[in-house]
Length: 488
Image (cartoon, rainbow, N blue to C red; front, top):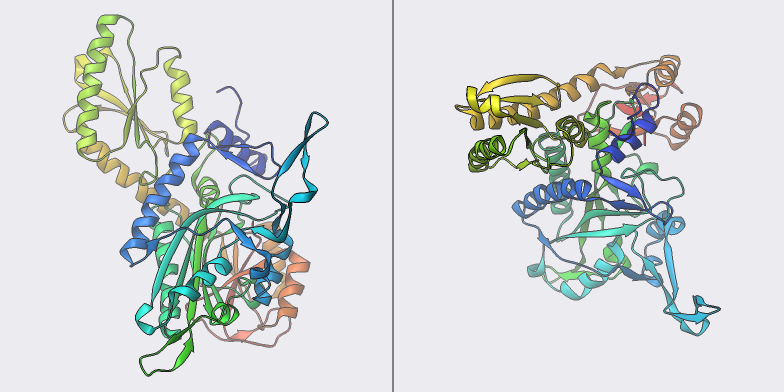
């Protein structure tokens, strides 16, 4: 490759940047904190989007689109919401430019009567619409999802994990009862867990956030948390029970079947392109990206090798037959028949890009009726018979998917600890990292003390109830152990 990938053990942060560069996933843009998502990165996002979109539709949701710009007054209607996002908002104050001194400047006469906020999230603009859509219990539930971009004015950014502008989906639902809304919140959390584990091969812990960590304006925030290869945690998705907060803020009521006027119950939920960052840090190695087969834009690459035109014709015909058989098994395959680079260069490029399986085929393979098969995840190579090759590759892709999940799960389990004393907690957090289960007394004061002293935060309160005990810091009663980690 043109540049070397830094070893994970040497500098994990630089390794992450190098993998993104060599896999051609994204570039930094001229606008600080924003990114250019390159075709390889966008193809990966499209596969994530396609899988999630089908899961949303299978649970009864429909897609819609709402405006990018939100009147400033809308954010003022829900106090917790505006407080949570006030420091991250990009504000549009004028509507045009004018020529000046050989360039352009803001036309002072175009100042807007009311400033517009570039959406950091869409609850406010969506609930303004829901007020017009909902009159009766017959109009409920409303199950809407939006695929969009949002802007949050981040000061410290990292490609995919935290950028000023990012792509995401945001679900926004309205219900007649609290029970229905809570059920929806938990249902979508399970959709995220299923996607993370079955498509991304990324094991996650599900739980609920503490009050200090929940979404601005939510009653409860549920989350999926994973542990990356540097033993830091990543919040990979959230699902929020909003209660009636936004319905009250925007006066969204419905007439019940008994004729009573009641406020609607709400949820919102979302995942973003930070999932790509999570995928990179879960599976990849010092050679570059590793992608689980279910999400790989190309699951198989075929590299043909020839020296003469006669050999070229025979090898490409042979490759064409294999490609046809693979496509019949719904395997995503590409042929790399570029003539302006060596096979070695191609191997390195495809390895860095994380294509799960590589087939190399030359004149000798035609003669012997076989092919060289290489796995990206293990690096193992073998000569395999042409007969039944397509089926073998398809089965291997399933094996790779399963083994990537198993490897990640084993890594997380070996880096998950349970402690009772604060001294043990601090020692593990400082020297090893990882997930640490420990008792906490439920107070914001103790939570903040732990964060200040160790830089570890409560990632979630697990949904499965545990044994009661004593807080590791104060000795006060604790209902169950909660999950701590240092995090992105």
